[in-house]
Every structure is written in C-alpha cells, then in structure tokens.
Length: 242
Image 1 (cartoon, one colour):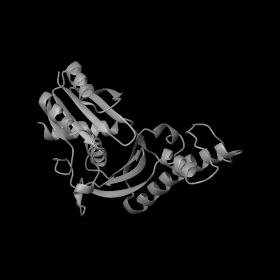
Image 2 (cartoon, rainbow, N blue to C red):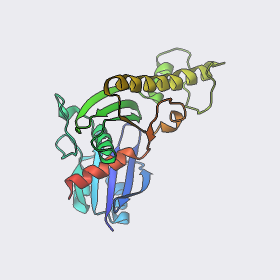
Image 3 (cartoon, rainbow, N blue to C red):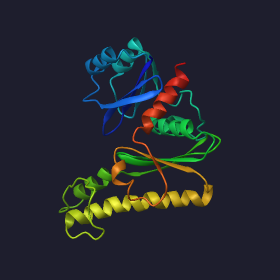
C-alpha cells in the first residue's frame, strides 16, 4: 500500500493530508514546521511519496528532510502539471492555486471549471476546457474583512464568524456579521453570474476553511469539497513522481 503525504502551508494554517493507494484518508493540522515535527510524521506514516505546497517562508531544511525520507516534489512554477498556464509570469502563480486547478482538471477533465477558495483571501481560479489556467481574481477573505474593520476604525469590535444572524442587524455585532458574510455571498454569486455570461456552461468548485458559512447561502449550483487542494496536490505528486 503506497502512502503519499500532501503538505499545504498556508498563511493561516499548516495542514497535511494522507493518501493511501489514491484514497484520501485524513487531514491533520500541524502545530509548526519544525523538522522534528515533520520527521515524527514521516516515521509514523512510513510515507513513500510527499509533496509540499507552501506560500510561507518554511525552513529550507524541511525540503531536505522530505527528500531524504520520501520521493519528494516541491510544487512551483516549474512543476509538470496536467494543465498549461498561459499567463505573462507563471512564476507568480501561487502554489495553492495551481493545486486547486489541478484538482478541477482531475475531477472534471475537458470542461470549463471555476474554482473558488475561501481562505485568508478568496481566490477565483478559472481553467477552460483545453486545460488552460487563465487566471481569475483575488479579494479579501472573511476574517480579513472582520479584522480590517476593527483595526481601521476607532470603535468597531473584533468579532468572529457565526453561522446564524439576521439580514437586518440589530446591534454592532450582527451588523458586521450580516455585512461581511452576506456581502461575500453576494460577491461569489455575482462573480459566478459574470462568468456565466461569457462561458455559459462550467462547473463551480468551492473549497477552503470558511466553506460552511457560504454553502447554504449561495443561489448558484456548486460542488463543495473541503479537501480539494489536497486532491490537487496528490494529482500533481503522481504526475511528477511516477
């Protein structure tokens, strides 16, 4: 049984997923990127392959460690991908976005796909039916909006997201919840509608840590998958580590 570890180091969380023989087994949140933490995982899982997607400054020794224990691949703009990136500067594309569109190609090949990731930032990633990643857009994520309103005003408090609140807020907290969460919902639906005017028939894949706050509220049909980035990382690992 072949074991692959997929590491995703984002701005908010450090995550890892375990795959065994093409099957997603589990996700783990890591406390840090220390080499002793990662080495303990490598020893306990007896991993054969590994891949790292990182948008942070992780320790260089970490890559050497993964290389020593496994057949390792670092996701970057030079990786072999099941897609093309016809943009001016492919080296500027975030590794996380490459993983997301790779997952879309793997799940819905030869179709238009719009992948929306709800994390620290919200990224909209469009890949066409020729497997060309055309780009998309980036906007502030949910918690970034809460924090910005708190830090850039004198009196607005810092609040945390809640699933239940009224359309018409009755106090400061519910006004903030309604404004941010319903505002993002309208943004997502509006962008999907804009893509529909140009591309007509395409899949919408939604993922990211803030997924539960928006799936019940969206009017457009979407495919929700919290593990989408890991599935994309696994597909890229297989593509590069055959």
